[in-house]
Length: 377
Ligand code: C2E
Ligand code: MG
Ligand code: MG
Image (cartoon, helix red, strand yellow):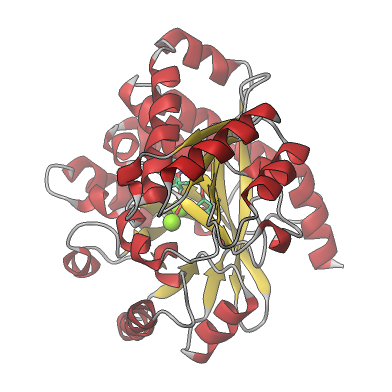
């Protein structure tokens, strides 16, 4: 879920609390810094109205000009009565505006995230298995492709596949919400099989040879005994080399009780598929897992790139992980590179590979085809 925060103060104290949530936050000091921002990409916006700063109403007008479907939370650390006034003004211009509870002072992003995801989840929970099944069959889901880059040569070294769900006449739903839902309704197998086949079909039809692709697999799907066979059959059918496929798993995959998942990963590794440890640093007992399975790639979670350069603690983690990966002779991808400063800094520390909005946002197949043509020419 993407949340836009318009706040004159950068709420650094919040970074630790959303480390484990699939939530990405874009900060603007003021809405006047908004060039190149597409408001429609966000699920919610928090307008932190400080009386001294006083651009709350202007920010709301700016938001209303772009979309009225965005959930807007008005917030003020010192004076909740003022937030309520701005909320009413925002509602008058048609925004779905609300205030955050008075006790949200220390963690207002989490509060906004909880409110948005709770309302989305209850909407999703009302959808039965049949509706979701139908949504997959009706083509409401589609893959997007986000390039991974070599930092020094600025070449694309592969594409991560991310799922998208866009129900008709509705806002797109984040994979952070629909993946657990598919798992719960036991539809993960149908979804993953459909997605994998769809991706191979799309990339096989590209004019130029496809770059390597990376596929996220949840532990539930890896636990299914036929997952491996299905992947191998598809690779064979489309003539896609296993060495060009990476499977990204998170740390929970290797926890005890998931032995089938480990067997599946080993089988895939045996046929040449690359295995990647995703969101490294946010899970449980990461270092132990680094030695218990020989990963071909580690992806350092994007939360450690936030506030870098400048955030001393994240800088230490970044530097240490780069050294760790070098010592283990494992490829390290730095997730969430959003600015030139982050890229330059990561390179200076010895970082070699990265992924993030600075290079490219996730692209649909049409945009990918244009992107690859421009890179190859
Ligand atoms: P992930 O595998 O770590 O994927 C990276 C997420 O970070 C994606 O979010 C991507 O859009 C976002 N991202 C990439 N670069 C940047 C950046 O520079 N800044 C920020 N703020 N965000 C960036 P997305 O697409 O919302 O996916 C969230 C998570 O959902 C993924 O995290 C992945 O674990 C899971 N997921 C997505 N699609 C699938 C799927 O088809 N199957 C499974 N099992 N999981 C999926
Ligand atoms: Mg991933
Ligand atoms: Mg990740």
